[in-house]
Amino acid sequence: MSAGSITVFLLSISIMLFFAKLLGEFFTKIKQPAIIGEILAGVLLGPTVLGMISPDMLEWLFPKTGEVKTALDGFTTIAVVLLLLVSGIEVDFGVVLRHRKTAFSISLIGIIVPFALGFGISYLFPEMMGVQDKNIHLLFALFIGTAIAISSLPVIAKILIDLNLFKTQIGFIIIAAAMLNDLLGWLIFSVILGLMDNTGRSIGFGQTILYTIVFVVFVLFVGRKLINQAVPWIQSKLTFPGGILNFILILGFLGAAFTEYVGVHAILGAFIVGIAIGDSAHLKERTREIIQQFITNIFAPLFFVSIGLRVNFIANFDFVIVSVLLVIALIGKVAGGAIGARIGGLSKNESLAVGFGMSSSGAMGIIIGVIALEAGLIIEEVFVGLVIMALFTSIASAPMMSHFLKRKESFRLQDLLSPSNFLYSSATDKETLLIELANFAAPKVKIPAKEILQKVMEREKQGATGIANYLAIPHAKIKTNKPYVLTAKIKEGINFGSVDGINSRIVILLLTPENKNELQLQLLAETAKKFSNKEKIEELLSIDDKNIFIEMLKQM
Image (cartoon, helix red, strand yellow):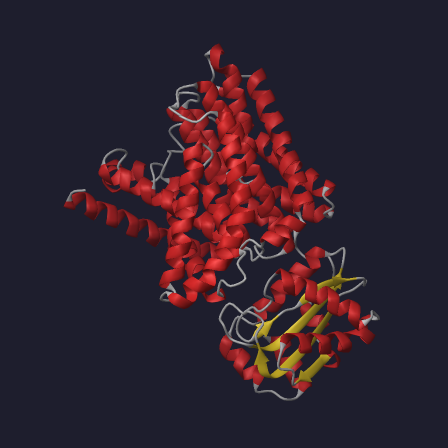
């Protein structure tokens, strides 16, 4: 690259980051996921707004061809690969396996329903969708069905992180279903690419399926064990955190390169490798936090901004095409995901939340749209419709998920906190404290302490319940009609795996009814919110009177 091209490239990256952070923070302040602001930042910087105000400025900052264009495309490709890598690291493989039945049900029906709607309408009414060439009717209908059915792993993962749902049971179910959905969707799209016969692919569809299955099985069942053995050696022998971060990125890029080569997509390889790495019991929590913060705050925003840079939403806007695609996508994807979740055993509200969570087409819809546009399979108006559909479903997904996961009961954390459910503990390890809390809770909930302890310990094995700022929230679902909140103040502090590395000195045990997952999520969120200010928590720790302690906690 010339000096001028390097200057423009670096300036473009800095402007993208600035507007992504600015709008991302704004939407965070109004209780919406930052991803909405990041996508809108791209719309403002792209041909829709900046292109209308100053076309020359747009072409200079984000040229359509040349060295800067190539560099930006490469950078955003790396960004999406890294986003899926870190998303995979956050997935508990054991939990995914435990929920595989529900995830498969959601994924399969979540593809069949929207695919059937998209294919049927596009095949029966091709002229309405701008198709004049009868020779491509079938291919076009197959493509529209796939574009609507496919979900977007990067967007879904980011939304779950933004809503603090990623490490919850429903979060793992959604991400597992999205992974299967994406895999099936890309395999279907591979068939379409093969039928078009002008993609230059050197690997046939049968080989793609075989190589992908072998890769997934090897990485998750053999590579996972090898990685688990390598991680402690790397963390002890090489410089920290540079050595382990380098190791993670190398494996992530190798996995991405392999799946891209066999004709699926690079992000699937990165995601599968991320799962294998994250499943290592030896991987330090600090390492997870470093790589997640760096990628979700730097690389992920750049990728989401790039979505808005791709298209002018005004010049090629066709109301009929956009409306048809939106209606098909919302009805098909939400209904498919919700039906699959209901069959999988989730409640009505959880099923609807899953349906909207799976409805996001996001980047994947745009990526296959770009490929189809370049191949001449769709016209620009259809591409614009697909992008708007992808953006709308991505934006609508988060607030609708929040709505259906809202508290439906009259229980609030404020009302459940009580001095009578408070104890001081001198325990020095997690198991001793949890035994003490189980014994303390048993007469209150009228369930044997052994049964309570078993449920709580089962949840502890799924992932750390330490939050931050001296707080840990062990929790479990039990056979009860109402929730119970028990608070323990610990003398020395116990390691619950908090993300900030600080031992927990305030432990709040949440016991909720088995059939009310929304209530558990609500109480977890309310509890974490109270502990957002470290200075106030340190002031709370100086209080010895349990009545004053609880009253002060209620007011926070």
